[in-house]
Image (cartoon, rainbow, N blue to C red; front, top):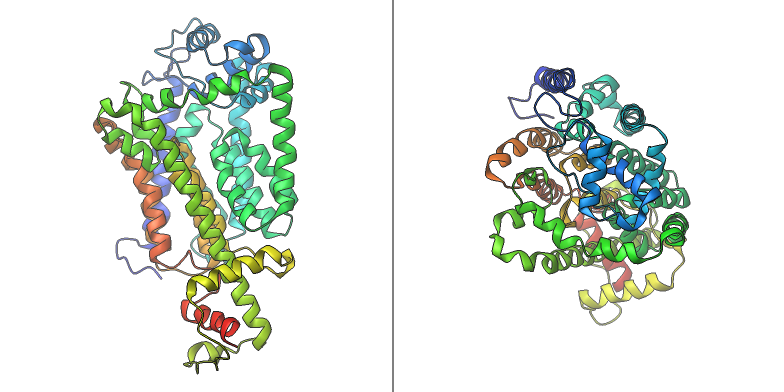
Amino acid sequence: MNKIPFLTPRRLRDYPRLIGIALWAAWGLEVLLRHGWLGGLGQVIGSDFIAYYQAGWLDRFHPDLLYDFQTQDQVQQTLTAPTPLPGLTPFFSPPHVALACRVLTVLPLPAALVTWWGLTLLLTLHAAWRLWYLLPPDLRSGPLPLPQFLVLIFSFFPFLVGWRMGQNHALTLWLVVGILEMERTGRPLLAGILAGLLLYKPHFVLGFLILWTVWREWRALAGFGAVAGAWVGADLALHGPARYGEYLALNPTLLGLLKTGGFPAFAQVTPFSLLVTLLPGRSQPLWSPLSGLWLLAGCLAMGSWGIQQMVSGVALRGADAREGKEPPALREQPQEPPRRMGPKIHPVWRKIYLAMYLALCRPESVSPRPTSGWMLALLFPLLVAPYTQLHDLLLLVPLLVLWAAREPSRCLLPTTVAVYLGGLFLPLLGAPLGLALPALIPVGVLFALIRCGAMRRDGAHPKTQRHKESLIFNC
């Protein structure tokens, strides 16, 4: 129930519509007033798509010059002639992405961009339709029918930013929704295959891979490995491994862009990007090793959390098997301490014992995967990756849908409103300051998930969980 007086149903319905109309009208005027490839505001239309297109062209004709910035600039200027571009939009993606971008060069650049916009629209509509059906029935039949859900997505400022630049955020949303749907319906192999197709942004797959590893979901890992092996293997067979070394060596250059004049550092959304924009420029030699440590710490934290969730799942499942179906009254009444047949076991040794048990037990004995795990996997690249852009905040849409489908929460509506408005106003506030203020959004979402108990295992109340663990170890 909404207890915030300002957030009336009418405002929640009408304000996103007004914001969407204003944003799309501004984009339409920018296109109508364009001069060649320069929009009415003087910015390049489809700048990121041009970078992908030139990467595909270089992969076809000059693969050894893929990461030569001077060559990239010459190709982009040639593609957009006679419009002179104000600067270079560099291509920083892995080499196998350039191999996939070859398909874009089948059409001329203008036709390819229009086709890409049409595909973006179709993928977004399909993903939104599938997400909408995950919402509770009272939301779908009440304040959030499908048209209003589409309004929220298309008026979300990060979506329009990605649309304007010709980004692949809609494809990312579609693949992520597919992964979640395959996991929900018990088809991990297909989930892994879709994750392999997401390898054009490796940091977006990392959270899923960590959970699948600690949860021993070998079929998902096999599907991912098959697609990743075929894709990367094809690139290695065509061009060799040298380009991957060049790609890895670009990390300091990529981080250095955050302090470069004219670069939109305000459109970065990770805490590390915010940290870099706050640090003085003379500390730049430390940024690359710090980013590696940041990523490693995030991976270890994610893996530890996944193991803890799996241990809790085994505890709950084992206790249920011993005591049968627990009646509701048992959760509400104080429990008599179970009779102890041996010495007291330290909690640390309990966790070690359960971890050893998990290593030997069959996968069928593990409880279904908690929704909170997939929520954290979606949030992972926005928190841990050193470089993630504003349009990637679209990943928060399926996260919020999973939260709504998991359980009612008084924090859900304020968090959703904060994400929506933060995606609009924080980039505007950060632009004159040169700060990556949108990084506050994923941090705030993580805080809300923890504060409101959304990171607990599904259906596991803390007191009930401790009681069930005691049944395993003390009986």
